[in-house]
Length: 406
Image (tube, rainbow, N blue to C red; front, side, top):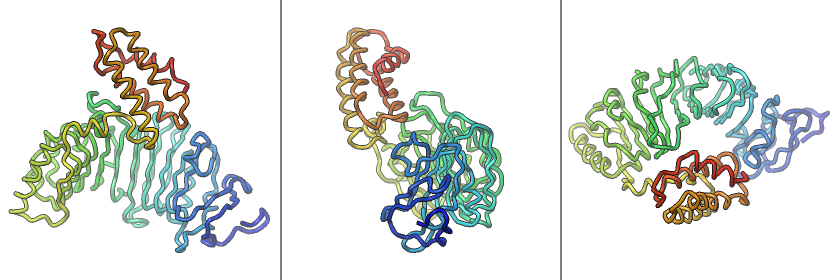
């Protein structure tokens, strides 16, 4: 890279792996390390640690054009995939002249913010909103700028709204609780986004169910993709216009209407679904094929017995690195076995304390992992014991908080 007094290298001129000083937030403010075969780049505050390749304060102004000098070995823009945590929405302006293949943005907003992507050339935009900060209003890209723009929004959907041309597809992953017995989650009003034709709803397989009552607000759907735990599945019968329906990682399909409810279906997928309903769907698929052959993909696969869901998703360690998940599950097993013999609250406290302190010396226990461990403690408090009265959530939480250093 040149020194501060030299012009920037021509666009796309740097294609090799190496270490390059860049003027990201000021002259030579950062060192960018490019590795062979890596097409992504993550930018965010120092709290992210190794999850961010370049550390930038949340409110810092970023010169996105510094990346124009970089290209893949084949000559296409690099990085192909950007992940940014912070408040600088300048990448939307940058994307007017330099296409962004995939942009993942975790906005840190102290006030309500309008982001203008009308002229932005974005293939895919993923936004994740936490439960604090200002609202985000997005002006969507014009369809003629990029016909197949995909939008995904996760987290606190009540903080988000969008106006403009509808995306080619919309994915929503609301923040739900971890408990399948909680009252069903109701999707907030999403305004103009209710006009989309292709919708994906994502949820944890054993989390708080999302009510499909929300589908009544989506009059134009022809494609629907569901992942995880949902209720009010009987309301799917109102979506008779669907040409594509996909069901994945769904532990309860008992209220699912028969396939004949969607006479226009060209494609249908049920993958990792409960066994009883899965067998019923296979038969319905064959029956339908006799009267109207499937013109696109149609399959029902990976049928699961009830115990599989508990094994795979019942504990909150499924997203942990394998070595940490192994340790967490071993500690959980010990605590569960100890609690099974507990005859007093003191015995229970000792079991949960022993589980909690097991992680005090482990590296990698940050906010997400702490929340997972708190959920594990709640699950343990609900497991079998010999005390004769319930262990309250408040009681278990107080033991957890008193014993943890993370």
